Length: 332
Image (cartoon, rainbow, N blue to C red; front, top):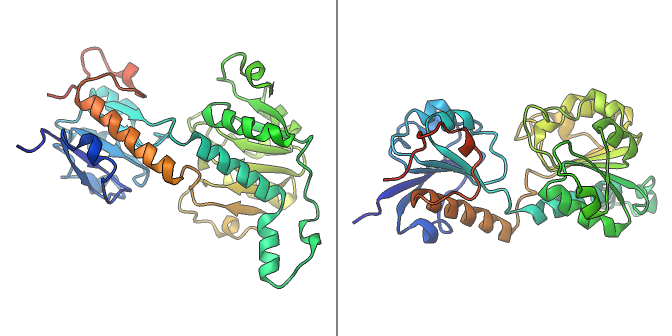
């Protein structure tokens, strides 16, 4: 007999070699390769679980109303902004994420971007490729020891970055209105009461906050105007945390010396004023990736799907408390 359930990977993946050993005895697996919510029509109605990545920018009520058997949606990654978790909850569908697969990988990547921008790695590389060989290419690069790194969001990744940066001699400050009291004492770092104060005190600022209504365009003209002149800005969080127009203006004026961005407001990057800006270095939303981290993310997403199919408590639900009493769907 075929397995009783059907699990669909809505986007991003073209194979299920990691998921199959976890789910193969319970479900058939299928990769849909979608790029929009419309691509899911007629293909998900009988699915018990949706495994969702980030290629589809929004999945909401239009899809959820068609799900006849779905008990859960697992976002294979940390952020779940492309899922309408309220609409899912209203229909009794649990949404989960995988918040802990790539903590060290993103922190490593953020530190790499900070060092590359501060030490003018790309400028040096380009100059040598162009035939030059002179130390003046790096003129203006600051010594790290004694400088202040400001971290916005001291969750898993922000904490991991702080622990990596301290041995380099950087003073660590953070702004996070949702941080648990005592984080500063536990890590030996300094809490700052406002974003403006953090920007004014920091030589480098690295973003590690969620994207939500309070953090959308958190880095804007006002916050950038408060920045210490010559600051370097790093973003491995979410693109819309930064107002791209405000950043470009701050770079052009010199208020921000450089930016190192793994994420941008609209992906793929569609603004050549940023793409070609001499003071920005980019990576293509790749901070999450290592061979080990990618496999861990997929395996943990599949394990969460398995728990949902078996009626076991999910490990990382993000909307369970919003499902009306008695409305949660269970597999049958």
